[in-house]
Image (cartoon, rainbow, N blue to C red):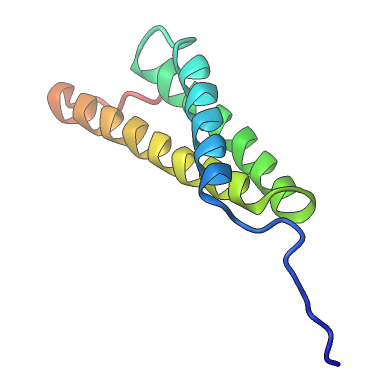
Length: 98
């Protein structure tokens, strides 16, 4: 008989959804700490970095589905923050992050 290898933590839709929901809540909490565009953008970058470190740990030692959800939503949150910064820059003519 040949051995059967199975993924110890297979990626499931529920895991991806729970990771995405947790990351969305995480980014929302940190985004609400910002009082203007500059602080919102920096809080979002900081929260995203912490979320991606968590996703890397989950990929190695935990549920890869949850890590996938965290990574996808974090990338989306960073995209929203980048769009907010770009719109502010375009309307004011001044780079808002410094």
